[in-house]
Image 1 (cartoon, helix red, strand yellow):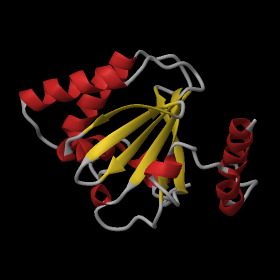
Image 2 (image 1 turned 90 degrees about the vertical axis):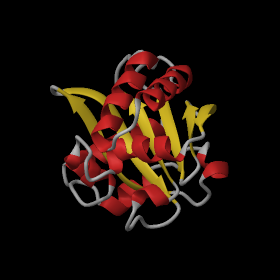
Image 3 (image 1 turned 90 degrees about the horizontal axis):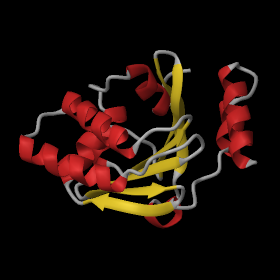
Length: 183
């Protein structure tokens, strides 16, 4: 029921029928963030679409306002999938998008892809995958609220979260929505 309430309020806000404050108040903080990101507040959200098809909805959480270098701030991204996807597809696409953000060698690519394939499960519509950015240290992942893995590598962490938050993101409108600067 909370997911339906959040979706409905998000749709209403997108249509201009509910205030941003009302939507923010209705969005419940994912329980997995209580320990890893205490005080996290919803900062922005948006849909990811591919050729018009919904892939996932994404929400950005942080304990403090986000300013400056986003890779240096603790935050979380929560993806709620709209369709079935294989974990290997998610990992492979993530690596491709990370290459847009910054350069890295073949060894890192192989190591990071292997780690993501192990961590990212196959998903169905409604499944949640949450990543917590631990700046300068690691990226910790949760699947439907349960911890599913961690990549302890500062470069991986910066590039992975950069998929959505870097100015070089392939989805600038989605980035703006996450940062609260776009409708």
